[in-house]
Length: 262
Ligand code: NAD
Image 1 (cartoon, rainbow, N blue to C red):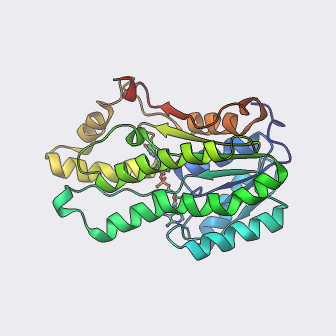
Image 2 (tube, helix red, strand yellow):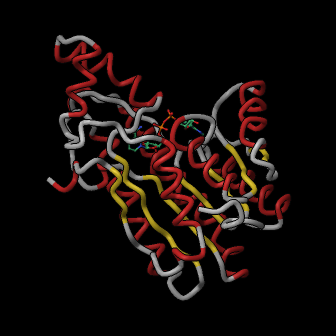
Image 3 (cartoon, helix red, strand yellow):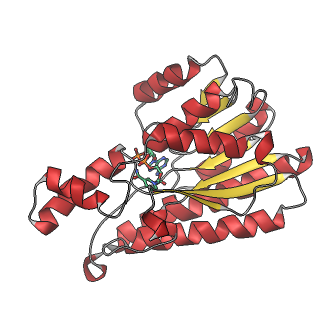
């Protein structure tokens, strides 16, 4: 990826104040894209992340929207389309997790996970597509998961949302196949981020094991025995946004150390 590969393009990345989204923001900014960050931090935290990503030398803004709220998503997308003269790259990355057996799974957590991990992508895509079609160029990248292809116990909402997002990816790819707009999924296995770190105490408690043992247990699914890194996810997303990836659409790229090869 060269520093000019995404030059002149603007990327909106949801949930990019932390973890994978922030890794993608760095990779795309390094490749020359202007970046719109989004997430749920305080004003001071958000300003700090904007400064951090702006060091790559491209224009960086913060797009305020809670991904649970369709009206806020629409307003953010419209503002960024106007401020940047178009959203060329859309990365749907915001996501949360909750782990519980199906009979104890709180309905409010189900609703929140479906809203943030699935429905928000419908809303951002719906807002971005008219401009992309008009310009005959666009890249939509949905951050799914190995859980878009495989199930695990205690993750009913997450697995349902990620399978749904993988399906949405294919429909959007087909509908836009002749419009210069691609839509692909990236499906990480376990990546070392705050989202994964936060699950370890629950796993440790449920299994009666230490946090260190929980970490090893998580990686049992991943034949490489290693967490993927946010830089690796960022590099793949930046490639999918680039010109050489123009013929790739409707794909779901696993980046999971071999998990879904099993
Ligand atoms: P993270 O917790 O580090 O970051 C999540 C980001 O989403 C943050 O910026 C947070 O502010 C934002 N966010 C959460 N709720 C939001 C809301 N309502 N509105 C706007 N922003 C919101 O998580 P991560 O591990 O980097 O995960 C990012 C994505 O990657 C998620 O979709 C997750 O499902 C997926 N994923 C993660 C892993 C992993 O191992 N970390 C594996 C597979 C898939």
